[in-house]
Length: 94
Image (tube, rainbow, N blue to C red):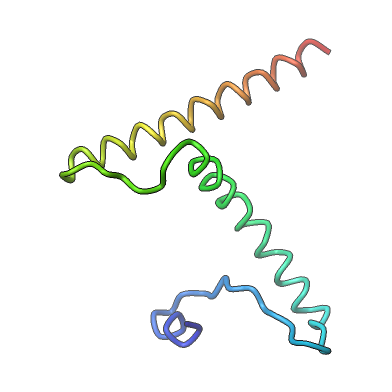
């Protein structure tokens, strides 16, 4: 995978992995930590959406599938908006 990414001139975001009896170097641990910050933000969104229902669309047709995915995204965004609004309301009440 690293070779394919290099050919397409895409910077790899794949984590480094230690092997048995050989820990990662401090540099590679720092690199993994930096990559985790970015990945966690994205993976939390996918995790939240997968908890909302099945991950497979059983609709027939591209338009219905697009609508189903769009509604899931809208639902996630509304839930996130409500959460953030309640957080702001709590901060302004203090």
